[in-house]
Image (cartoon, rainbow, N blue to C red; front, top):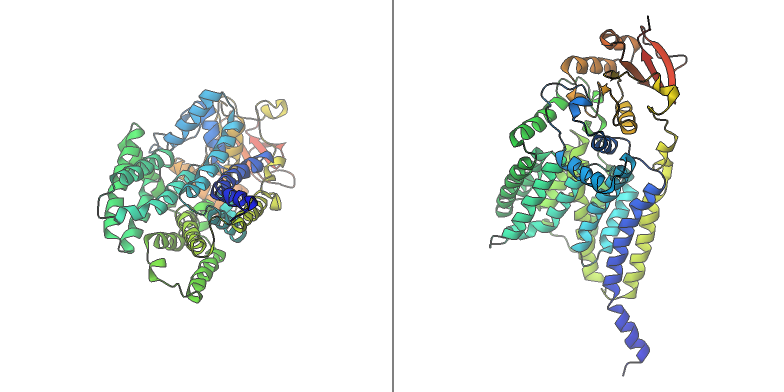
Length: 488
């Protein structure tokens, strides 16, 4: 006969799965809150998305655009941020806070609802934080591509249902809705060809065909949500083509469109897991010959063309694959109602929290020393553009930071968040500036185009002033010079 103490212990063990689920939920929510408590701000697009909503202006009133760009490229994300702003009356800082926390939590929460052992997901995130910390950093950028990563992660869990003989209508509708949401929010609809291709490469014909139907339906639905489906699909495809057109050297592309170095740490991690399977006598060709592993490898290989193939499409598949391998091991070796399991989960959660939230190399506080240009600063306001003026700059940081702090300012920017959106002649000038490593003479065509209300804003430290003739200069903020035409 069992003692009352043992009965109580056995009764408590029944709650171990619930405790671990709640632990995983809590740690996923607490990590972005801790990071944001440092005062962290992402460096790029999260700032302009928030400012766009606050500005209540179309992009042609914010940027000097080439004629092909007639509509917003992220209508869904701006609609969501607009709803948050309308409900809460929050400012752009709060919208960035929402963007970072909501998107990080969305991506990281999905697996714990599918896994019997949610701690395997925490272990995978810990491996990601240790082996490739820059990939964890991308999850804190507060940008809509993270929503697409969440869609890919969901596909990884749902795809086995697509190969069932009976047509899984509910799963197909869910996937179509997820693709539609991604198209509406993130816009990179053409890249959904990657997971479809991965399914056919893995010879999953039935699942691949069904996924292709879901993708086609999702793209049509997502584009229709914009109100201008044909223009939206055409513009986003043109944007992709122009981003890579007429570039004589890879360094002229934005960083995400340049190739990566292979993320060797992840490669060794995957090879180590495969070797471990072989040693355990568990080798099965289906471990690597399946659409998820193929998608991970496809994204990794295409990363040598552009980094984002790996970070946005290959990485979610890779981290799912690692989690699936750990989950299989836990099913073999771990008692689901063991206190050892609970202690392990708490240990992993604690180390994960420390690994992700530690301010290593000032990754979460780098922006605290940033001095922004602001209309509210009387000394700076004298040197900022006049109403209707244009800011000429060769560094996108000028746009991100200045637009973020001055969303309603009455001027426009020649360079915004994507060089390909610039008028062709201005893009050619920018390419020449970058090709010549920002030599002063390369700025001359812009100086000749400037009107009295325009300003040249240069980011960087100089001995004296920027070597760009024809302008009078003022050191307006830390590492920021503003030039204007001499007053007559």
